[in-house]
Image (cartoon, rainbow, N blue to C red; front, side, top):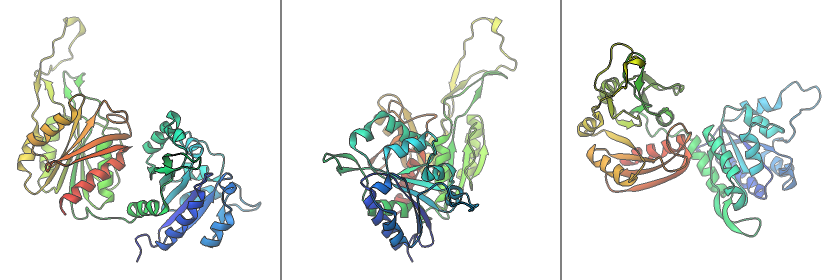
Length: 399
């Protein structure tokens, strides 16, 4: 049985010369056992006729937002609810810009604004267009909404030039889709503990110190671990983020609380992914009353908090422990030192000087370092995609 048997994919085709490749994508999806419906933009119909897709799919090709008079179905809602996934191939700069900015002036864009299905995008455009700041901003917006990008690749372009912007080949696109939708259960039976977000330490009953972490990276790791079959315990500092479906969430606030809960969860864990931004310092003295402004200049004496990850790294035994390093200078050197000093199996470096990495953004740019001296650089991607890279390493470490 194929990996994608009984899966349903809506194939959206926009107006680029690479639309001819979409016919082969349809054929390969059908070979994988996928039920495919095709939606075409007006511009796509200038490159290839709907009849081609109809002949291969044996189904109507959808091109119009409005149905025939007397049909009470709202077509874009019906099509938005139908698939397990939506694949846009090719995805032009124009289409991506409309969707990123919430515009819905045809059937395909209405579907994309209405769907709760996972969306995969195969960009196709000239190199100069792909590199344009406006296009890159639109891509970042869509990544932040959970869109998964496949490509683009480098190679010959329609203009005769060669460069980045060419749509990935059909087999590459279908393989990426198959891996994402095949329901891999490579963490089934494993207990993954994820710490996320910031911690807070009181100064007085009103004030406290903290950091800028929002928890987005940790919540993304928890979401992907659940999707890959793990039992997930998510230990979160203060965060407004929604708990990933299927994860058990435990809320904490201080470093001491996070340590206590993490130690307990770690006892029967297989993996610990320590994304939390745990404070390195706390006030030595906490006032029992609000400190008054008229008390004069305030000196706050800080003392180090206990780095309990060092203990867990020393005690881990067969368990896999992943740490994070957020650095602003000598990034790789400092990350490698933490990997060794804390007894970690893998450390994920965030360099705050890199655009697209760090706090309060939906993308990340990381480099993975493991104890065997291996280094993996991950270009800017959604935090969900970065999470899969980390979990891929974890699974590979057991092989």
